[in-house]
Structures are given as structure tokens and as C-alpha cells.
Length: 195
View 1 (cartoon, helix red, strand yellow):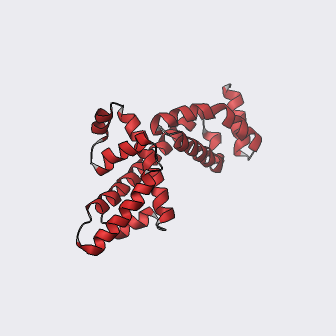
View 2: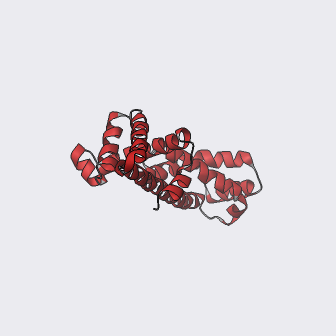
View 3: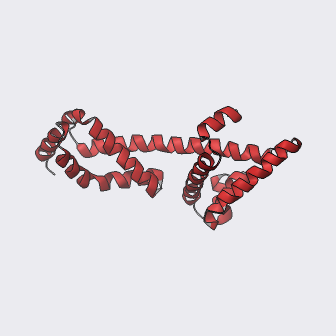
């Protein structure tokens, strides 16, 4: 796409032209997807993030008249948003890890033992929905306290594969906690456990 043609399309988009936006989306989405996937290593997260980036660009379309290279603008926005998503995922993973650890360590008194047993049944039911490899990664990293590097060495796989399994497992666990226990993880972590 030539600079003049791109400038013309960006001007049209800034004026609310959805067809022009659809055209630029089709041209540049593959570039954005490749960049975001390199950071997030998850097809689901990548698709959601790409969608979010394009929505944000559409919402801020009035700024497009000042953009000299849409591809650069898009990729910078994609990188920044991906890093924010990654921080959020890692933060949720950390909170859920504390949640798992606290329940694994709860052994004071009959009531806590009952709660711990109940939680263990809940956790096992969630873990049973994972693939055997994801379940093994979760057990090594969250129940045995191994680092991603240690788990990768134990299983003979790459660190990035361990991380991918953990991101997927923690997402499934977070959804299950919110659905089956009827509470939001953020609320749970802030009210029950001091993190």
C-alpha cells in the first residue's frame, strides 16, 4: 500500500468510514497477529488481544490523521497491549497460586480440614478437565512449587511450553472458581488472603 493511498484510507477511517477500516483490518491483521502471538504464545489470548487493539484504534480513529505509518502505529499499540495482557495473566496466575497454596497448607482444626478437603475435591475436579500434560505441569509448578525451568527440565520440554500450559490451566481454574464457587478471583484474593 502506497503512503498516499494509506493516508487517504486513514483519513476516511478518521471520518468514520467502516469499509475503509475493514480494508485496513484485512491488510494488517496478520502482521499484528504474528507480533502478539510471539508475546502471548496463546491463540485465544492473541485473537482477543488483536480484537481489542483494533477496537481501541477504531474508538480513537480521530488520531489516525496524524499517523505516518499505520503498520508501525498498529504494532506499537499491539506490543503495548500484549505486555499489559501478559502482566494481567501473570498477576492472576500469582493470585491463584496463593489461593492453591493456602488451601494446600490449611490443616489447623476440624473446620479448616473440612474446607481443605472440600477445596481439594473441587481442585481435583477442575484438574481432571485438563489434558494429562497440563495437569502434570500444574502439579509440578503449583503443588510441588517448581519453577518453570525446573518443570521443563523434569518433563524434558521447553520453558515456553510449560508457561503455555500454566496460562491455560490458570485460566480454566479462574473460570471454575468464579463459576462454581460463585466469587470473583480478585475479590477472593483481596478479602481472604493477604497477598
